[in-house]
Structures are given as C-alpha cells and as structure tokens.
Image (cartoon, rainbow, N blue to C red; front, top):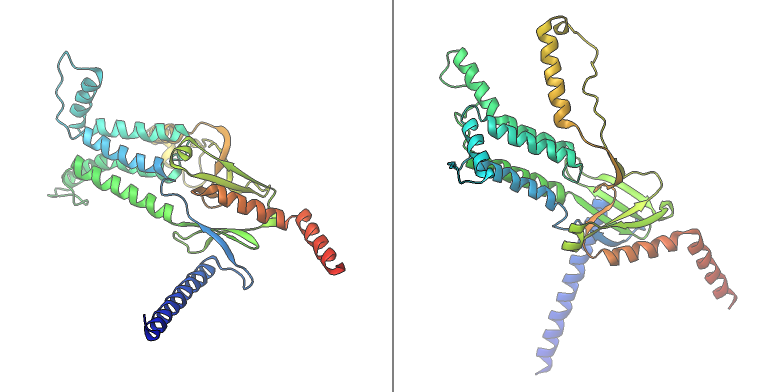
Length: 337
C-alpha cells in the first residue's frame, strides 16, 4: 500500500472519529438542555423504563378486545355444554337488548381492577374502562332522544356498536395511551444529583434530588421484574414523595354546597341516591399499606439495574459526610507529602 493510500485512509479514520465525537457532543448537549442541568453538571447515565415496565396495562388492552370478541361470537347452548358456554349464551342474548350483558361484564372488570389495587388500578384506567362500558348505552340513549325529537339519526354519528371494530378501537387506543405514558419518563444520574423527568403534556415536569439529601437507596423487585429482567430503584429522601399508600377513601355520599332544589322532591332524592351508590360501588378501593413507587420520582422498572444501583451508591457515598471527610483527608495527606 502506497504512502498516499495510507494517508487517505488515516484522514478518513480521523474524519470518522471527529464526526462521532461531534455526534456524541450534540447528544450530550441535547440531554443537558432536556434535563436543564447547570454548567458544571455532567450526565453520568441516562435511563428510561423497560419496554416491559407496563405489561399489566397492555394486558388490560388485550382484555378489552377479548371481551368485545366474546360478545361478537354467535354462541349456542346445549345441555352438554360447560358453564362458561351457557353463561356467554345468556349474556349475549341479554346484550341484544341494549348491550346489557356487555355493560355488566365491563363494569365488573372495572370494579375488579379497582379492587385489586395494583399498578393498573389508577383513576385514568378506571375512567377509561367506564367509558368503554357506558358507550353502548350512550348510543342507545342517543337513538331514544332522536326518536323523541322525530329525527332520522341522533347526535352521535353511529347507528350500531360493532363489537370487533369497537374492540380494536378501544384496545389500540388504550395501548397507544400507555405507550405514550411509558415513553414520557426519562431519568438521569449526574455528578451532583439524580433527575426524574416526565415529558407528557407539560414538558420538563419532574424532580431533582441532590445526593446529600438521599437517606437510603433501595430496590423493589416484582415477579414480572424477575421474569423480564427489570427492577425499580427508590431514592428515599424521608419525605415519602414517590412512595404512596395503596388506599382510597370513599366519600361519595357527601353533598356539596349550592342549589339543592332537586333534593326537595322524592324523585330527585331517589335518583341521586341510586347514582351515588352506583358510583361508590364501582370506584370503591380496598386499602392496604405497601410501597407504591411512582414512575415520576423513582427509577421505575429499569434494565441493567445492578450497574445503576452501584453508580448511585458510589455517588451517594462520595457526597455523604464520611465521603467528603475522606476526600479532605486524602487531600491533606497529599499536600503534606
């Protein structure tokens, strides 16, 4: 190989290295802007939740489609059939009258999911399931209103509730909302602090914790975490922010201030009582005291968690009083030498 070819190859390698360094620098600058770091701060590690972090939420999406599919099947019942087939036959027959059977099953799923008080028992999941359950009767009510107003169609441009199409729509919508929620979290470990960011509706929403404010670093692993190789790391500051109590109190019966003219009539009292009891039954949630990591304020369901835990412990030790004293001791010893 001639000297000219060697020099050309060396120039290409140098150019490639410069481009790679420039790309890395641009990425670091973009991350510093995203996490809003100070000038002397450097990102040691940035992490996002595992793609399997919200598996239970995706199972809810599958459940929504499965229920719609079950009610789209033309079930037949014989004396030799098992209990499930007979039950579905009766529910589908009831469903032909205003989708009552479908509504009962979806409300039951919403109630059971709420009572489980797990990672899928949040308010927005319950509201979504209630919307799915109450969509068919809402369409029927719209048809009744159109009939009373002597109109050919109602206000909602849907004449029928197709189970397969609706199931695909609701399940895909729920999965996309979960994916958007999952991708909104981004965590960083710098040379000064840990940063928890969430870019969902309001960009830059999050929390920053200095290492000397951290009292304890602990991990919380679940069965799914052991199965899919992720873990949650909690930086406890003693404020209990990000660690909630898995409970909810029911206060549905309280009456607010304002005009209570409907309450003076017997019909108004009965109607309000029925709706209050229904809402209380569906949204009731059993209480239990457990650590409930918040994805906004912890390293929620991250992979390679062992290396992250080691880095956090190292930085925590370095910024603790004993770490600072040891560093001063070493500096004094070096100056005396």
